[in-house]
Image (cartoon, rainbow, N blue to C red):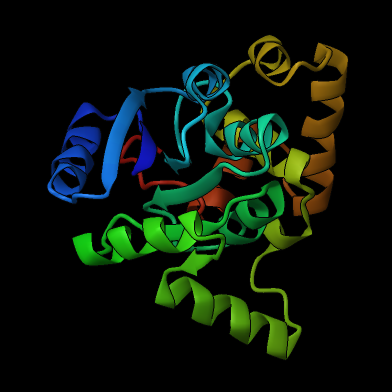
Length: 215
């Protein structure tokens, strides 16, 4: 039996995935979490085989949660299921230790195949993501200015563009507010922007964030 932890801040998304996986005989839904922090706590307590992880959530988000989970136990397979098909998420999540990457438009059969493949010790990438990674590796080209960010810079960038304050980011990432401020201005310099509004618009332009009619 493959024990799975579902992590997504949307109740309907978790319910949908749970409904799909409940019908599969060799998969057991061990528990659910709505935040990265909750996911890390449950992983420490219950040690699931597989974590189905959303990227964009309140608090530390899926990227940092993935990194923390892999430090708890390297044997736990993390499969990211997200709307984001663009850089830098595939690179950064694989760097953080994810073994699978699916978009939320994947079929039920593909999700089941990913769970089984990762549980068996392999990797599973959505065909579109795999193609993007392969083409980028062959061409050696940089598709997005966000490619230049480190994993930590990427995590801070995501949290900044969600409107989180330096003190909240510092708390969630176990950093000092001064260090977060340094990361913030380093982001501005690397990406050629001068404030959070420009940073958010750039992230929207490159498909890093969901479109918001208020922005």
